[in-house]
Image 1 (cartoon, one colour):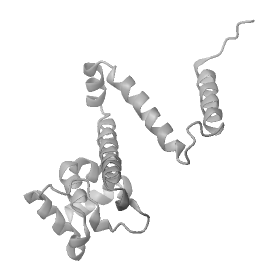
Image 2 (cartoon, one colour; image 1 turned 90 degrees about the vertical axis):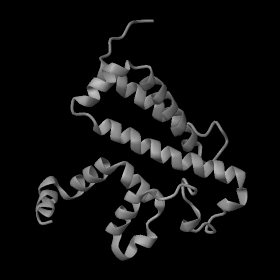
Image 3 (spheres, one colour; image 1 turned 120 degrees about the vertical axis):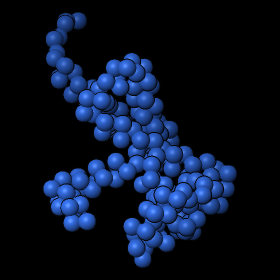
Image 4 (cartoon, rainbow, N blue to C red; image 1 turned 30 degrees about the vertical axis):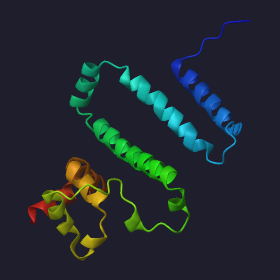
Length: 168
């Protein structure tokens, strides 16, 4: 066998190609939604690797203009909470999850959590639609105002947002 020299970029491409071919080989689990489980495995692997990093080093990186990463982790956690809670409820009450039978009002991540005063204030932003806004959305907005503002800036642009704020 001979030695072959590859650079980091070539190695990364080869790994991606191998991963794709492994995914395309088919479904080793025998389930239709095997990508769901593959994504969970990848998230578990990546989370384990991130947890092994030096917390002080990560904190310094985040403080040096990369706080967006913390926002993304927060959003991923919220998404995971929703999937987890849904699955746990579906396992407890299998009849709840029949397609087309679940009303939006029947599902909330934290149904027993009462609205906080700030959530009532946030609700008024939606005007005549305030009754249609799920409590989970109001709670998310209360807990993550920076993400909401960053999202609006990403959509409308900083100058447009500043003009609107100056008109208040």
